[in-house]
Image: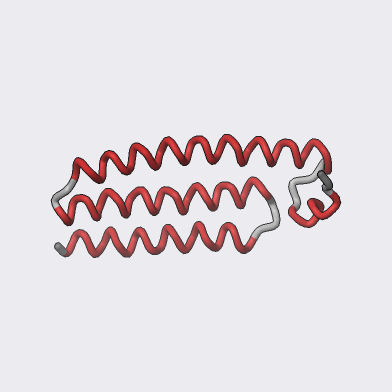
Length: 101
C-alpha cells in the first residue's frame, strides 16, 4: 500500500507539471505537450486505481480507450495548430486574435 502512495504523489506532480506547461507558455506546441503530459498522468491514475481496487481488466480497457481518444485529440489539435501557423506564421497564442471564420 505504501507503493501506491508513491505513485499518487508522482501522478500529482506530473499533472501539476502539465498544468504549468499549459498556463506558463504562449506557444501552441508547448501547450499541446502540456496536455499530453496531463493525459499521461490520468492514464497512470487509471492504472493505479485499477490495481488498488483489484479491477485491472476494467482499468486496462479504460486506458486503451483513453489512448485512442488521446491520439485522435492530439491529431486534431496538431491540425488546428498547423492551420493557425499557416495563417499567422506564428505559434504564439497572442497572434490568434487576428483569425476570423
